Amino acid sequence: MDSSTTAVKAIAWDKQGRTVAQSRASFEMFSPQPNWYEQRAEDWWTSLCSVLRSVTAQVGVGRVAAMCITHQRETFVPVDENCQPIRNAILWLDERSRLQLDELDQRVGNDVIHAITGKGPSTKQSLPKLVWLQQHEPEVIRRAYKILDVHAFLVYRLTGRWVTSLPCADPMGLIDMQAGDWSHELMHKLGFDPAKFVDIVPPGSVLGEVNERAAELTGLNPGTPIVAGAGDGQSAGLGANITSPGKAYLNLGTAMVSGAHSDTYVHSQYFRTLCSPIAGAFVPEEVLGGGTFTVSWFVDQFGPDVGNLKLPLTAEELLEVAASKLPPGSLGLMLVPYWNAVMPPYWDAGATGITIGWTGAHRREHFYRAILEGIAYEHRLAMEGVAKATGHELDEFILMGGGSRSGLWCQIVADVTGRKVTRASTTEATNLGAGILAAAAVGWYGTVRDAAAAMTSTEQRFEPSEKTHKIYDRLYKEVYVGIFPALQTYVDRLTALTYDHDER
Image (tube, rainbow, N blue to C red; front, side, top):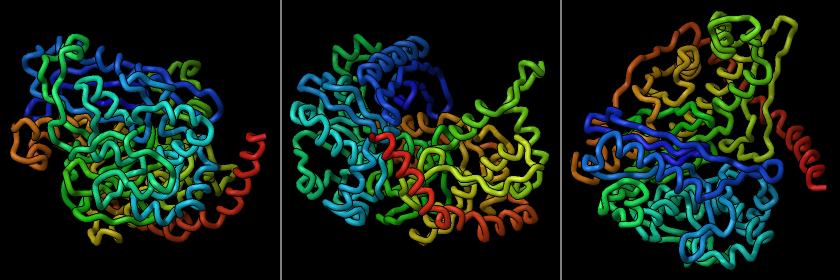
């Protein structure tokens, strides 16, 4: 079961990793002020109940061996003793806490926080937003019995236990990665009460059973095991069978998320480090807020009006066809895809997108292709940092998510990185990762790695073109890697002026 940013999706998997049944229920997102994003946590629960009733009706409740939850990360909600929300949940993409990033640096030190938690300064994490709540809504912090990630909220509703999984709590930015528990050092320095945070268990462990009340609402049998899950990014990596060094996943979803496997804890400015769904391991991960979001933004704002043209293709498909006919490099048009700021390697909450090289020869399809190329360049930048930090070269990328349906994009990633690219057989790797954890927990397979090997598969492979890779390699090394550092001062100043205006 995946409780994502826009919907809850439940999928029933068999032992071979085949979809048996699925259901989806959407819920609302609110923006009470510009760049603020919230949800009603109660909507997560009612949506979960709805999709589970649908799936159990399709497959027969007696066939459900176990359930595991994956979820949108960093999103959190304060609740009372009965798990009733005190206020709306604050979402991962909320940016109200920019000023608190500087305060955290002054009070603790960004380098210290990064070393402890594996994460550089970013408004995406829960930590600066919790500091914001301390300052702007202190009564909420005082009244909160627990502060819950999405996994913890749903687990309590299902089992009555205040507990979450380590890789679910980890993205909040308050976990001591080497200790594998909440960082009491950070909580003490920042004035947070450790009692307001739930117990933590290893991923893949059975953390409870469905109680009678939850069974009535969901259609599950009472006593159904609930298995400790992982955040959606780590879960997607498991669903792509990234369980050992040497390859990485690339999830081309709303955000672009890519990650590898590490048996030891490493941290670097080029990635953030998360706890793996495999207990004791880690995931060096890149997150770019504008993945298919940036593509969709461009198509919505500048795409051709295919209705008037009366074509059987969508605007995006029309651009895809036109862009596939262009040479690599988009006739000198290059794009830095920071439409939703940047985390690694610059950790700049005020970063914005950059496009250079415009001439009168450029058309919409050039900009479209430049977006795909820019996101591929950014992926290469992060993955080179991962390879250097871990000491393991990455020879293959497993692509998934909605963007992986684009054969053009898959080939561009292969050509930019010079590595083979393989498309995952399912676009639902995030849900599958949760299914893999459940399958191993109830004894279908000996280990999580065994379950991942048995339940995952790939299909089409894209090999890099030597000639095209040489072109992209020069563009990447001689142009792309220098663009943002060269313009960063200007971009930061522009953003600061805009932000000051918003504050006034």
